[in-house]
Length: 368
Image 1: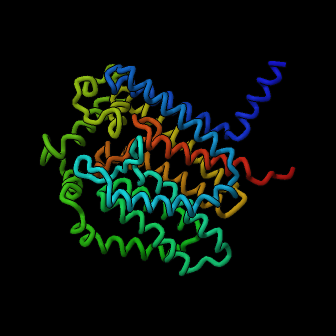
Image 2: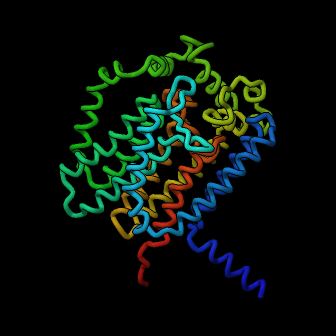
């Protein structure tokens, strides 16, 4: 009897989960804990804290995977509007930390509302296009642009260029999957390129320095260029097979800044080398492929748009982090998905994975 109950409970737990996505997530978490242990100078407290966040995020993922996509649609507008209200609260009453106003106190804790918008924006857009399925034209694309621009403007004002970029891209992915013509995309790219001088003048001084540092990090090797120089040295010194776990000199001599969070990829590259980097890229590629397969098999336009946007947003996380650590993109403070220390981004990503699993669970069954 007990064995039968345990079997039923196990099936109930596994029922909403997508096996491949869950397995890949677990592998990345294990890899992240291994790297974090080295990056934190073998600090068990960091491991314990991350395990706590993992348990919470996995539980949240499972709960969301049990919600039908039709029910998720009902939350799209309230979450988006609520997120905008919270961003307005940050602008008016937010706490200033290191010169940025990004956090809002709500009772016993504080939250970063911009993280909510990474999922709220694509959910809102997917809901909007679902409501206008079969009648998507210029008017819908213009309104969609406004939906993206409102939260992005609030986040840029904080200022937080990295998060604002992720929000904008998450919305652009939905618009792309909704059928934006290639000619329009080409015109927008040309327009964006033409507006770069204006954008440059609108950037804050520290954001301009980051771009200039990217072009020539050696111009200020002990200041703005320090992060990029040290991370590139660490990745390059790893060679093909790496220096070995717990043996990274740049890491343990504390040359790499923010080595448990934004620059953990430098630690990983130094200790596991080119081979380890290839394995990590393969794992990320498998996650992206699985997400796109789920999007392709979704039963509704809402599911296809949202699954595609979540998947490509995950790709953007990984690409931007690896790019900035490798010196091909400016440093914008984007964590390496599922490997970096910290709970906010992890919860956001696994919430997205929960939505993917919900869409996969409710896909139409293929007739044989």
